[in-house]
Image (cartoon, rainbow, N blue to C red; front, side, top):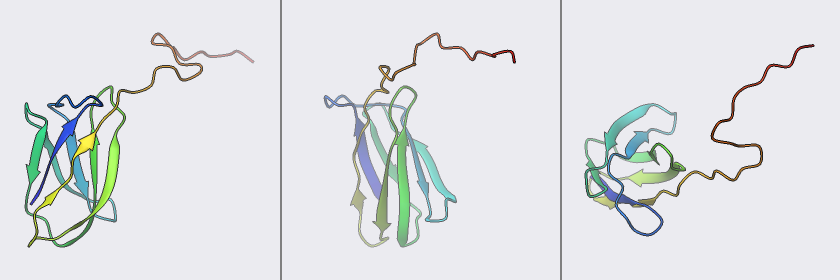
Length: 101
């Protein structure tokens, strides 16, 4: 079993975060979401390495590589920070511009 909690930088739980588990070749094994407490749980894996990604709209996604073992429960928490809006050239009303030759 793989379980954990997803929170923001000050510890607030983040409900509705997508948790995606893939094998080392990028094939999706599981796709779930956190509950109202920011918690998730998943089962049904084979032993071996997997990549676990936590992502939510407006948050920087986080990924980690884990060794899953069906005999041992594993806890993996994530902290998601807001996307940075102070990137040079970024504005909330940014539109593509076509320049004529």
